[in-house]
Length: 124
Image (cartoon, rainbow, N blue to C red; front, side, top):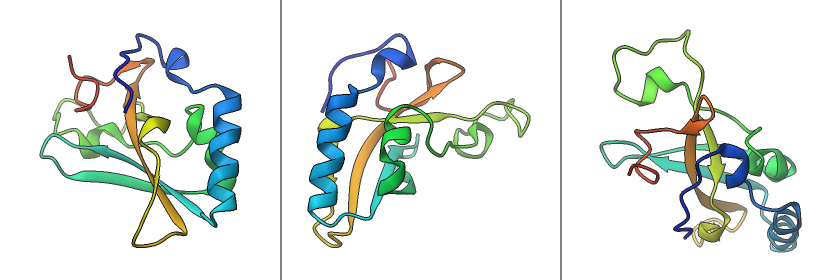
């Protein structure tokens, strides 16, 4: 897994060549869905399934987002606040052994252009 801490979301994106390579590998293996996952403050995995056709947008921060108020346990945030954006760490990408039509990847959460301070993978 990546040990690099990025200060900006754009610098955290994998290269387009890496995205194409990983997508082809997944498609060749028969993967249909990517499970983009992050771990909440209680250690519970949260995920959103993404069809393989949306792999590139997911890797570029344009995939499904998480409502910050519903998963962060921060009472001062509400539905009007912007969502968290997951950016996958492709070094953690694996095909699920229990269902080879799915792949699983850890994601780092970004909020308002910065690492989300409650994402357990980017907390410093």
